[in-house]
Length: 433
Ligand SMILES: [Mg+2]
Image 1 (cartoon, rainbow, N blue to C red):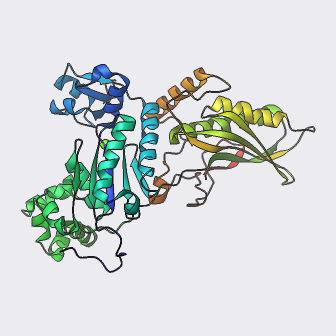
Image 2 (spheres, protein in one colour; image 1 turned 60 degrees about the vertical axis):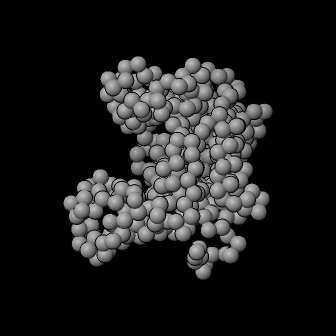
Image 3 (cartoon, protein in one colour; image 1 turned 90 degrees about the vertical axis):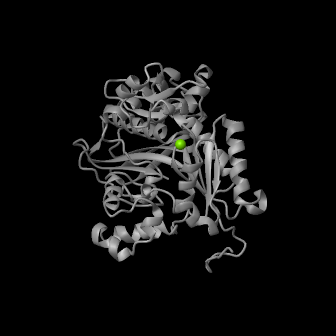
């Protein structure tokens, strides 16, 4: 018999949460780009001496290649496997299309990474049927529209849905009914639980606890002696299948902006244009990182007397290329009437955002600039040279503190001061709205 918690609406299905996860995502995209790779062991990752495998096709996994394995070791293990460097631009484009498919079933989609998301389909059943059926439809639609396979977990909560999709891999679906939770959960190794890392698994192993069932049989007070109260309580809760976190839908940003307030007012055109270029570069890098292109560029100027001017221009096609953004922003500055002015603050905003597609987006400066900037992005991603580009991605703003100097308007406000900026600026803010 199915029991319901009293807080639940009677028309809400018992297992409304889906976890959808693309199978061997990067490796599968590489196979779509080069169909001759189909059926071959493919490993995507750094090819240098210190590179690691980021994604492996199932054929490569059969040879023992796993994610996070040093590429050198993977090569030794499978010399005839195909090693491909990552192409994040393509992965981002496929990820955007994946998200579009998920959003066609419910607005309650919470992306976890490029290739996985939680969905709450509790309100979608009138339109699309029971959650398990929705899971099958998603799998079919993802394959038809993207050519990629995914696995789906259908369960009463996020924790169980994620475990179920992992168990369903590759190319499968597992439905954990509310009255079948313990049957699903108890045979699993304790390491399957969130918060049970290698060390915890080892500690529990010394107590003779290897499966979730064995863990559930031990009183929390006993576990607390070795693991501490908080950790023991959390594991006990998970061992019983409990998890009451809700699906937090992703909100697409409307704009990305960077602005800078100066210690000394700027009055020299050359200085001002150099600052506009620096701001445009940061806006472009941020757009590419988030996978968006902008249709409208806004220049904001605050004069020494605190008058604020904004000028904007809408482009015929969206762009994520800093050289384009700078050309527009600098053009807006040059078009201002009048003579010398003293400027206290400058800001560049990219608005009218659309998910960036696979096509080249360079408009004014052409595609070579776009390629060049993407190359710089990759270098910076690898070597972490540019500390001014924030490490936080969109979804992380909700779950953890963002680096200083970053501001997510409308969600979470953080001080806009960044002590590391160059001498003339005392305040630097970024916003994603
Ligand atoms: Mg995946």
